[in-house]
Image (cartoon, rainbow, N blue to C red):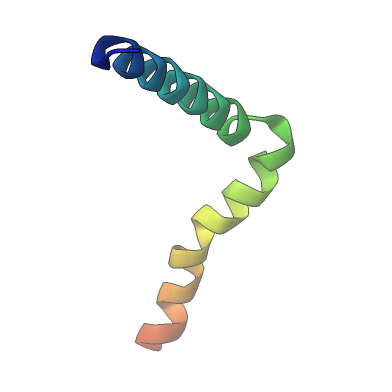
Amino acid sequence: MNFTWISSIVTVLSFVAFVGILFWAYSRNNKERFEALGKLPIDNDNETTGN
């Protein structure tokens, strides 16, 4: 097995991992949780500034 084969295998595995992360991030099960987490910095901003 030479460097070209190893490089090709790593590239394919990286792409598969990337697609898996995309499916996980955009799945409907995580939508509500990610929206709530996205609003945390805005909600906490009023508490830290005293407004």
